[in-house]
Length: 253
Image (cartoon, rainbow, N blue to C red; front, side):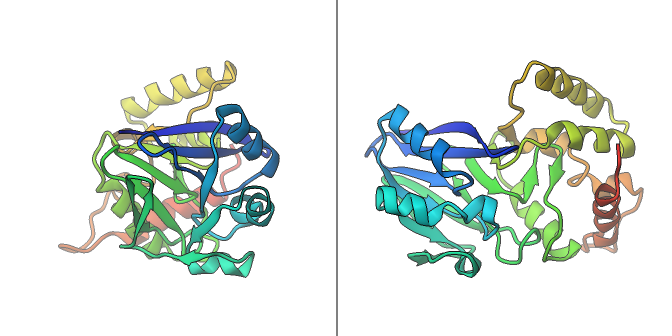
């Protein structure tokens, strides 16, 4: 049976996600950006929380752990770096497996935004929870990692099936679209940006996205193409990616 995902806004621009295994009734929340909306969503759905699945240690992703554990008794799963902020019950890293009822969630190493960042992938349902690594038309700022680390992480995500549904953790898409248009004039991007601006005018979320859509339009997956250069045979062009990421950091549009 499938995994049902319930998405809802948290804080100023975060999203919260509840993942519900229909076969067993087991439920996880992906990160804990804000306690009250998470508990309200659980109550509205009539779901009991079993797992907290952290992607990384930042307070807008793990800061609600302790309060939600106190309210629900949920088990906390995440990368070791989360212990800088709050205790966890099970440490996981890339290549590990987490079971949510009958749903198998593969842990993917996606460091760069933070050194130990991870994502969770339901291969059967083709659903990925990517935290702050990949955004709709963007990628996470390099607070701790290097361009090389982030590029390699993005390529692991890009290798997932094109129709994989991607749940990223922030509503940054309109800003990301404005930057993307400043570095890329691809017709597919222009069409997508127009749709995004219209959606935001209507107050509609632009998350989730898909791997295929990001590969076609996201400047951080198209960076070597945009830079007009290709690395040595078999070698990624990390410099091209780093240049696009640095340009986003200083973009004022």
